Image (cartoon, rainbow, N blue to C red; front, top):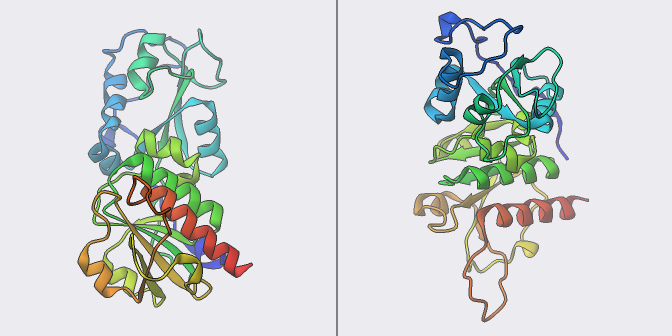
Length: 273
């Protein structure tokens, strides 16, 4: 699979958190933070908002595995907060369980939350396999698509006509850390067409079955949201359409977007083997 262009994708971390970026100065690590009303904690809780994550270039990673994966991916882990009653984290800031629950998105926090700089990628050109998520709004779907794209060796996941945030806690979790390393870039139809690869549209009921399509050539596979499918202009601009056969008489008319993306990506892998 193509690895060069993906490896050349430019990753630019945002400026580290500081009073100038709108975050209060870090508290002393010697004193346990016990109040959810602590000014620093309130500023971090604001990162639950996609708008704030984008504005600051920061996000919160939850749980030991996510924090460790972010660090292993080379992302800057600026601060860690842990509840001593649940776990220990050398070098972290101790907080009460109430504070950790305030910081965490999940109902049952796993003991540690970290403040991390988000990677930023430019559109990688010269690749041979791209996945394009068009109008996909659910963070869990986006994260699962990133996981499949990473596993299949895709050069990038391109997000079009949607505001799904890859650093939403649900997206991070369903990606199993793929959002930390896979180039995920907001792109327009014109930018996708400018990549110089074939654009194939995944359309339920299309005449060409995915296993009969040529997925060996350099291409971008566009998958829409399962409730609306691909917009007409994407279908019109595509070099071809392909579908995944569904059993006759099945109660469903289409697959989940992330499931469809995984099937199409690994059909490309199979053909290229």
